[in-house]
Length: 172
Image 1 (spheres, rainbow, N blue to C red):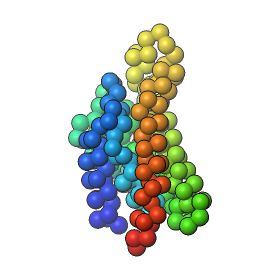
Image 2: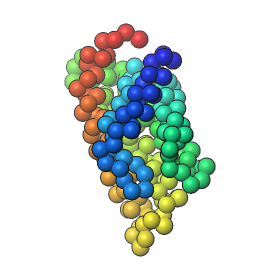
Image 3: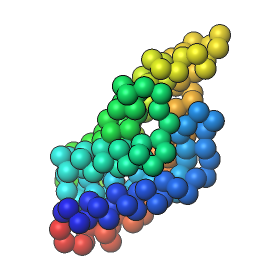
């Protein structure tokens, strides 16, 4: 499990460097950087998935993350990315051979991205509300986070739905 976690985190870091779109104040649409963390969470479950996600977030922070205060750095990196491991809750569904397997994958990806979204939304309102100008900071942060996390969700859900079946056959 440790070796697989290291490989998946390294792969996530590499995929994170391939940016399709980068938002002006941080956040980006990548070549599926969350997919290795989701794969790990589906294979090993909630606890190991959260740890792998949090380590991925810490490495992103150390390799050039945007932060302006310690509290913001913790919320937006290890906490937000740690929540990607929530996909592990749906691992039993993902291993099913019928259509509920695909539903489990999409639900797992959605849960991880949704809580990550909430972490970034809160950070936007708490730490970056001055960028909203005269606009409501909640609306501004919601639209800003959605601009890159909705495409990331779609990319992750579609690719995982396509590659999970053969990968699920690999023994743990």
